[in-house]
Length: 320
Ligand SMILES: [Zn+2]
Image (cartoon, rainbow, N blue to C red; front, side, top):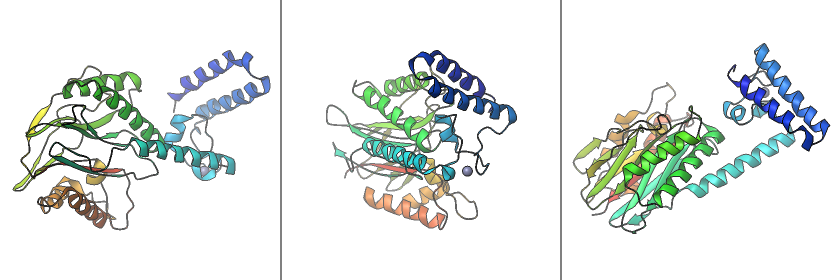
């Protein structure tokens, strides 16, 4: 919490500088709030709810370092404002999701996006290229949870969509996205991303520190290892692209760690092995059936334990 102090002091200075433009009462009220927060930092009770003394939700403190109560102890007006914020964030996020079941140039896609809360920090994208013959697709996961993560996800989505309109090679899209993400977010913010583009006989794939996509063939599976670090860590990181052949009927399965790290009541995690096992039994079926069977298996595994993290599953299949 100590590292917050300079930020809050800076806030105080900016407020004092703006004092001439608003009423003195208003400014004094805000200054008192800031001083109360500084005092809490010094006495070690910063970030604790004033009613129940439990820690306040981290993502809320990150957005507003002056919040004083946990979500359970907001007054009616604050509660309403919070609900409106969430509703708006959900609307924004829903609009960012790609079209359902896009099919282009002999490829079909199907995705499932299941945030653990009202909004998620997973990223899922499927966009047709401007030539109308190939598809760009991606699954990512931004650090953090809740509204803060969903805003960062929206930011990543905006960066990638604007880069995609430039018709750049895939390595260039990812390297530039990394630079822009580095330059526009704090060093603690990063995102993993597996992104690809369909080609004549397969896909080009770039994996920036994301869970390994699975290539699902009639006679087995392959895992595709990462080719770079997550976006947002090092500005001048280089990314390489691997070409993966897919025969008609083969699928590439991208997912987020909300699936492989799903927990059961004993604290066991679902793991990649079980995902691959679940996929193997359905290689012959269509993308919707494969997605159904995986998510049903995860739900069976979790049993009564609610999801702890967002789950995203994207299947890119070469048509027969
Ligand atoms: Zn509380």
